[in-house]
Image 1 (cartoon, rainbow, N blue to C red):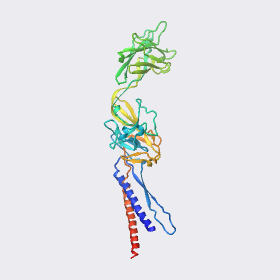
Image 2: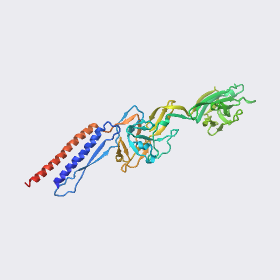
Image 3: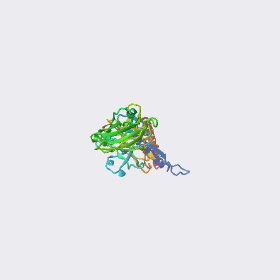
Image 4: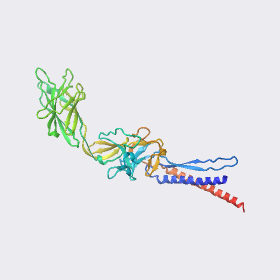
Amino acid sequence: MSISSSLNAGVMGLSVNGTRLAAISDNIANAGTNGYKRSQVDFSSMVLQQRSSSYAAGGVRVETYKDIGNSGALISTGSSTDVAVSGRGLLPVTDVSGLSTPAAERSLRLTPTGSFYPDKDGNLRTQSGLFLLGWPADSSGNIGNVVRNSGVDLQPVNLASAQFSATPTARIDLGINLPASSTRVGGSPEAYLLPVEYYDNIGRGETLTFQFTPVAPTAPANASNQWTVEIFDTATGAASIGSLDIVFSDAATGSGRLTSATPTIPTPPATNGATYDATTGVVSLTLPHGPVEVFIGRPGESEGVSQFAAPFAPTAVTKDGTPIGSVQSIEIDDRGYVQALYNTGFRRTLYQIPVADVPNMLGLRELDAQSYALSGQSGNLYLWDANNGPVGGVAGYSLMESTTDIAAELTDLIETQRAYSSNAKIVQTVDDMLQETTNLKR
């Protein structure tokens, strides 16, 4: 029994060291493969039930696994769509079949890094056929509420629809000073014009012109502190689209701050399209491309339009919206946001790339092209925002190197060779002993 168990143990030793050699060969072959996770082997002894009078060799068994939780060093590249996770976590990807499959049925894979590029349809993919997934953003760059324990809300990152972009103007803030001397006795009746460019929903530039005309005081008042504001829009042929009477407090009661703003009927045949909300300080206009809010200030507050003893000064006139622009470059920041940079200087968020995590990284099922799939041993998926919870950030212009250490692998190779030779010697020795036993019959 002891001799035959020794033979079995030697054969098992040859087998497990052959497995270890295969793992080492895989590691050395992929030493230059970006994102490769080192294969490891774990030997464990097998024990047979022992008798007091003899000893039976149980042998050894081997388990192999990928050290997926180990992160390789990051190297800088010249491509903004080279992406890696800097720390724990993996990027969500899919194969080519996932482009046309409903999200609930899509093959979800995970990878630590990828050199992505846009294909003919604009999808970001690697040469090995992995397509990057992310949550799409709306026109304001918001992701909204998304499901984080599955990939049902993930979509292939596509850059084709972002080639051109324009955002219509929805708000204008007026921070200007009107000269107080103009509303006093003997003041100049000159009207002041303030043109403000805005953008419609196809990115064309139009102009709103605000005409501020002082109202002359009536006796016995020294100053009227009142202005008429008429608004003209080039999109409607420069016709008046609204009119307001605005009144300021005098120096004795409020130091030039807005007191009231009252919509009035402009010169016929135009109708007044302006309304004023004192609680928000906003004048609402209806332009051909849609509603626009113009902030002029709340009564009694210093922001917005004022009347001080100073010249006409548009000190802080701002607006939102962007003109039509074409993409100059794509960037992915450390929070995982895929952003398009346009030649107009505008930056727009297109997608957010989450970082996936599971309780047991070693339980993931290995697939081709440095990708992994969920399994019963890995635990449930959770999609984190980059740099949140246990996961690391997303690094653009970066790739993750292989976790293979050539020096360590060569050392293991020598050890494996010696161990294999030793187990072969056991088999040879047992064979010699059995031959001697056979020779006893002669």
